[in-house]
Image 1 (cartoon, rainbow, N blue to C red):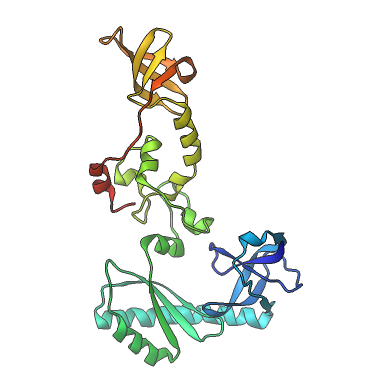
Image 2 (image 1 turned 90 degrees about the vertical axis):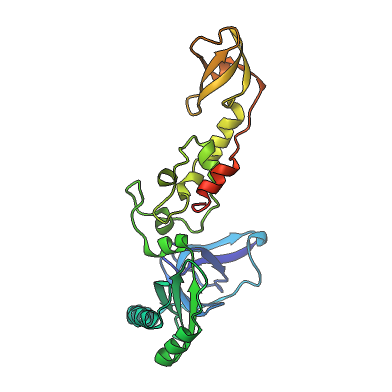
Length: 287
């Protein structure tokens, strides 16, 4: 076991562990730490606690100090400089006629480097842009291409549910989401129905997936052959959440399907839920 404190560098970002060096931190405090990007100021998202060594990526870097009022003033000044840098970079991108969309700008705490985040449909040769920006700011310049999901996380907005983006509100890391999840949850495979504002599959498909996987495990699927109190039949419709099945009985093939609870039937041969190639090709741009 090791004592750690959790530091977050973005409002809704990943939490990184640091050695508190016997300093007691409270949630909401700010601390100065050394990262791969240099010296940074982060917010305490997790107070001092003991965790298993297996959960730590060693060596664990120590916190330099608790942030002072002067340090917080530096952070505020950097935010003002970021706004100016954003406008300058926009003009430089237009001047170089580059096919890229500037999303955000970040100064490191010590002001030794400025990072420009952008999106683009393809690769961008920004070498001349970097030289141009370096001549203006006279510090280290880094341009980083990000995906549309990262853009949504940075900028925020409202989803089709009317609530703020999950990624911008509380999701620390993106979870893998697949077209198969949408199909297993009985959703229409219509891109406008299952994709978020970013144009990719909605992150919320992941939230109830474990529950759906359990229900699929105990519920016969469409096409399954089952034994009912009235004899064998084939499942033609399933209400997964209610556990209600519509079954076409073999002895009455022309009759309307009979309705049963899943507990009333015995599975003989189940079906698998699969995503065929045509569906994958149709939705490949949103996965």
